[in-house]
Length: 400
Image 1 (spheres, helix red, strand yellow):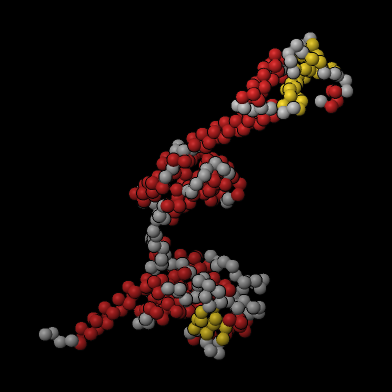
Image 2 (image 1 turned 180 degrees about the vertical axis):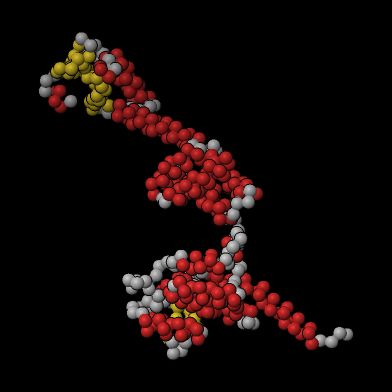
């Protein structure tokens, strides 16, 4: 209005308190465009407030009606008493209506609609194998159960139904847990993007119980066959396997082993920062002691086991897996707990100790378990040994 004031003067209308200026060039129909304003006295002071252009729909009559409405409010004390106050209330009302519409929209937002947005992002940040697995779980198990349901109406009961359905169809606990994780991630995505408020219904769903503990352990003959085959294929893998088999070390502990951790004179090694965060001592057999002495003479570097470039191992080569396959140890076995893997060697170490009559507490300390409960999986071997001892006693007993 500052530039307009220099070229156009205010002109009165026949309506009290209403006036206008003309635009220097712009027209509204055959006339020049007009900017309307109203003025009045409030609390002894003259006040003037601009309304808008004729091209925006304002007329002298409409301006007079607006002024009359404000004057009435000033007299009665009801309603906005200035144009600014009126506009502020209208803006607040507009925002309130928008909020109501948005809230209504969110109430009707379905799980499938949110999943589509979540999945579009997942494809850009996750590995192809991962997002394809999530897509499969959604299409087969999740979509039919809750896909069309509004997010706000999905309850823990609905997630339990997905879990139960998958269990009835023979899905593994791992697959069920994965499906629940997908639902949880979609709710987290919705919450972080202000599409959902509150807690995810998955928070109150009990995860399916799974027993993935290794059951299989090697016989002495199988262990001999495995070590002989590995010695031909890879000296490093053979030595790692021997160390695990005769000390119970985990593969990660073997990778982290340095020469400073060994005391070959005392036949022991110190394992620092193990899986449960504790330091423990492992005791060497004559076989492992001799193997380590030979490695020390032939290898340089800090790590006991390192690659040709001198860097420590971070993963086990497929030599172990191929050797096990060639020996047929896993032929016809579907249950993962019964398959021979590298960790089977640690399990075999513990099982052999129990077979020899070593008590579970001692086995617990040698394995570095944090609780005795973790070691009690070997109690069935103890029972087998005790039963065999009773049978030996029966041989010398006389019938009554």
